[in-house]
Image 1: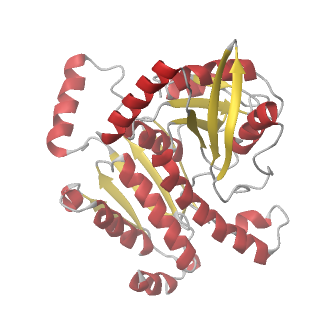
Image 2 (image 1 turned 45 degrees about the vertical axis):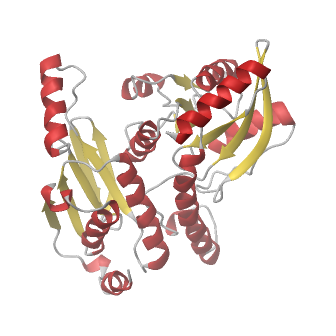
Image 3 (image 1 turned 30 degrees about the horizontal axis):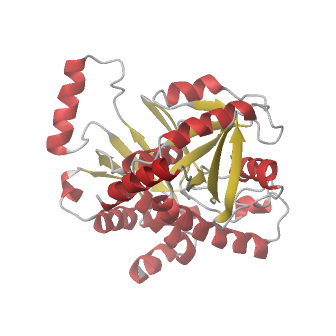
Length: 140
Length: 212
């Protein structure tokens, strides 16, 4: 936590010249514990990267991500938190066969049909989404 | 397993002796949705006292607050609740947002610090709830990740949920959006401030209590 603090404090948010997207296959975090998964994601966010995670975190992991984010907001200068959004296919109108297919795939490899976007709130002002579309609004 | 056995034995004892336990009822949601306003209305209606302060400034509730033994009577039935009002859950806190409300920088920073602790507290209290009323702002987009994360966590913990779309008195409030976003849940539109649809809310609350 102390290393993360130092690193983030050195970043000049107002002078950001490039946007860094970090694509993270789910296999990168599959074997990790909840704490390790969250730490890995937050480390990238503190490095001003927007993380595109293939798949999604479990609800309890999302809650842990929020908890740890809040702990960091409290301790890391200039860190305001995260923006988080998950897009996933809408299975409600799909056939039973398609739903079963997705369910089976989810059981085997996790929810790989979903995409999770996590970025620093200092960069992303807002993420607006409906089930099939995502809009990222950046800060000026 | 132990929880299931405890719940089962409590139900058996209650059925034999006709005695009702109080139900631990939590109020969860994003900041400024009206959790405290609703909890206040209920507590005021049935105990004569409010549970906490409300404000237009987000994160007014920064600590979990309780009201023990709130006895609610509805259509000849009576239930006792332990009401837990929680700080709004958010993924970001910026003290500068509070400055817009005329709060001084020093106080805004203090408020932001307390708000971060409040969010952690809210999440940690989830496991203690037996039923939860998720309070959302009817004029806001229901499809926000915080809303989905809160509801996802309640489902994962098998905690019965009632979704309340508050502030239906506001221009732009759209209950249908909420019903479409949460098709598997009962959504009740109310105005805690004006007291609109409270009868319907109590009806739904008693149905929720049956699932505990």
